[in-house]
Amino acid sequence: MAKTTTAMPKTAPRLKALYSTKLVKELQTELKLGNVHQVPKLEKIVVSAGTGKNKDDKRYVEAVKNTLTRITGQLPTERMARKSIATFKIRAGQNKIGAMVTLRGTRMYEFLDRLVNVSMPRIRDFHGINPNSFDKSGNYNLGIVEQSIFPELTFEETQVVHGLQITFVIAGGKAEYSRALLEKFGIPFDKQGGKK
Image 1 (cartoon, helix red, strand yellow):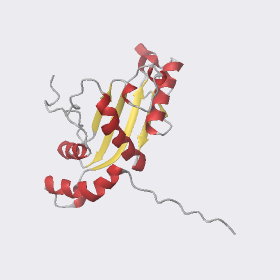
Image 2 (tube, rainbow, N blue to C red; image 1 turned 30 degrees about the vertical axis):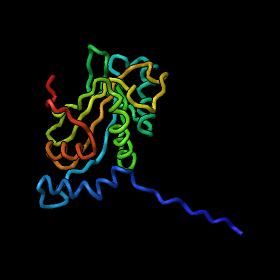
Image 3 (cartoon, rainbow, N blue to C red; image 1 turned 30 degrees about the horizontal axis):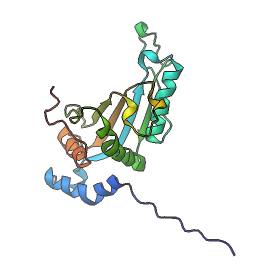
Image 4 (cartoon, helix red, strand yellow; image 1 turned 180 degrees about the horizontal axis):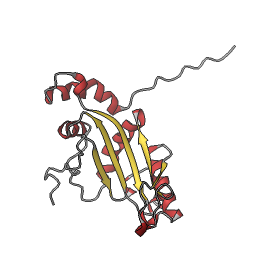
């Protein structure tokens, strides 16, 4: 007699479920939007790291790739230089200057959940993120000074210190809408308006 196995039903990530069941209605009301399709929506998160002057240092490049792989669960793609810069000995299309990972769907929401609830509280002297880092399209860019805030990395994996850039690509088109969405997801903005 053949064994029958029943697959466990996959549950949606916590933030994804929260967005579809609660946040969409709240944002539509708070932002006074006539159509539900106008509500801002997180489309993707791009996590990247440049190698800069360390582009020829294999240990540094491997540390960057390892960080991106461990914290996102995806293999990064290497980025080639778009412009030639003689001062830095960079030739367009020939030099690898960094790596990046694009997260969508389940992995995107899981990464966001870990970032907000586990990694950000580990930042020293943290007062919230800069509210002035939105671009004209309503996307948000967050700079991380060093990768040690991510608990997925061991002590040995943080010996080569490097920074990260996290870009939240948001459909909605306005910075105020995007900020409202990110605040609903629990991202803390600096109340001082980014001023020091």
